[in-house]
Amino acid sequence: MGREIERKFLLKGDAWRDLTEGVHYRQGYLNSARERTVRIRTISDKGFLTIKGITVGATRLEYEYEIPKDECNAMLDDLVEKPIIEKKRYKLDYMGFTWEIDEFFGENKGLIVAEVELESEDQKFEMPEWIGEEVTGDSRYFNSNLIHHPYSKW
Amino acid sequence: MGREIERKFLLKGDAWRDLTEGVHYRQGYLNSARERTVRIRTISDKGFLTIKGITVGATRLEYEYEIPKDECNAMLDDLVEKPIIEKKRYKLDYMGFTWEIDEFFGENKGLIVAEVELESEDQKFEMPEWIGEEVTGDSRYFNSNLIHHPYSKW
Figure (cartoon, each protein chain N blue to C red):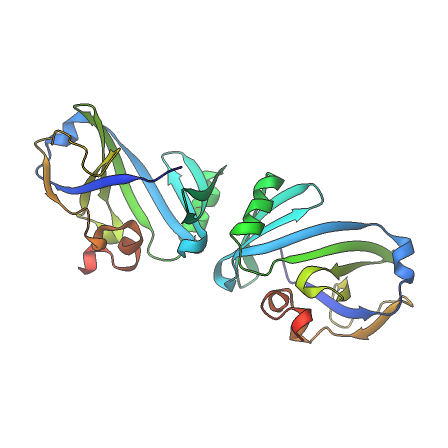
């Protein structure tokens, strides 16, 4: 647990595509309320159900259960809040930091963002050449907002 | 799956208590919306997470996963919609029919109801002597309403 400090960027060009393979994600929410989030997600050939509460002090209740992928897909098709999020996630190590690049499909097709996780807000790191404009504070890019206000509607 | 036809009654006296042992249930909802119900429930020493959709035609999506009881109890204490339902359920066979008696605790303490499941709405059955007034159509006794309007507030 503990606090996540992440900075988020848009990308420049496609050079990063030669450096990594992507993994397919589909995800949606049975409840997107912050007090009791219930997420259904497939990652490649596995399925997961994840329950999260709000952060109280330094702790946040979080439980994750692996469940059959076909049941996840049935729930993503017929039960969760719409639209679902579909994306490919790529991981890349650069100068001691791990970057996660999310390429979205479906209602968010065309959107690609990269995130790096830091240990403090002012930690220094080297910027790969394919990193573009920073969008860390821009709430349009929050995962929860990409459901209710997808990129195709901006 | 298919349609459940149940009739619900209040009870007269305590004679049924000598005939059966009860099993303890605690349950609550991470989402109580009919379109995507997410229920957390402990039954005796087991824990379950159950997801249900609405009925479309003759089918209703329903998935149940057994999960650790201590994780269920943590979610019932800190994550689910309040108040939770706490009850003891007793099963009794009488003249070819199974009766389920729910004795509630917590915010519904004092409420005891019995249900019998039938194959059709006009199916005949023998009434045990400890069965009282019928409350089948009374929405105050629906499980979902016992959360938002518990018996102690009637």
